[in-house]
Amino acid sequence: MSKISKAVGQLRGGLVETINASGLPPCIVGMVLDQIRAQVRLLEAQEEEKQEEEGSHDGTLQSAE
Image (spheres, rainbow, N blue to C red):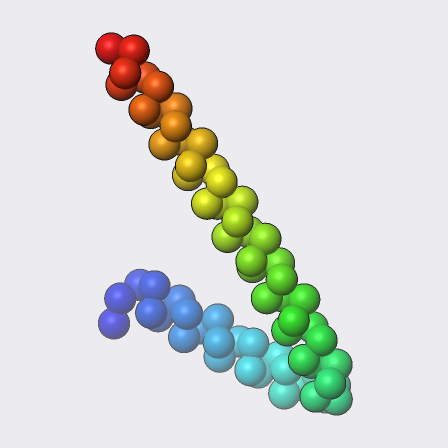
């Protein structure tokens, strides 16, 4: 099992345990999970933007050489 697969499995297991232990109604859990998904999308967009900026900087440096 790869490190990433193991980490994902641990994350899922932790989330399931926390959700089950919370005793919250499913609608509340769904709302929280929606908020987490939105945050992940935001982080992904920021990471993508950062990679694009690094790529454009690399291209500029290469063409200047």
